[in-house]
Image (tube, rainbow, N blue to C red; front, side):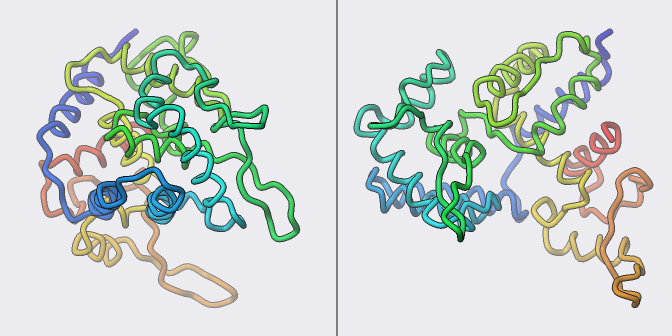
Length: 279
């Protein structure tokens, strides 16, 4: 049975996001930095696309730079696809028809999302790049494409259950399958059925909450807040036969009223509340 109170809490968060101004968190600053690079590199040459991919890979830690030639090969494929159809239009069109043929790679039987990019030190193929491609599409379309991310996939079923949607109706997201991922996100947005929700807002909620649950707060908090969290939650742990101070944050055991946040009524606080409810 759907939980109206829980859904309303999500609605309140979506409303706050719609009027939320950018802050000094790593998430907000990184997003602005990436967008500026997109604006400064306004052609679809391999070099310009490579610059965009490089900063996305760096900011989002997708680690494509650890593969030999991976970023360069992906940049070449994106540049080639743009010669047939504007990339932003291709990504937006794909959201409607899920037709992967628009991303067919010339001379190969694979498409943009199914191709393997880069090699390892010993020359072996290193695999797909669905997450990085979806992030590129997100910025290329001005935040109108959903980001395929391990955190989003982890949080999806928790939000579904939190809202009280029937478990038997929850769609399954196949690994590295962009089509099943988009379908699942569309279904969740449809079931939430709220005026201010979109791909960007839902991604922010799932990503922030997932980061909090994992105890990874550096991209969520300002430096001042992060240092306060480190001071409050660092504890002695044994490492290699000696005790060291380590920052360990576990939302489960935290009294939210004591969080060292600058604002206790703001959206960041709401994310912590939701993270604890979903854990």
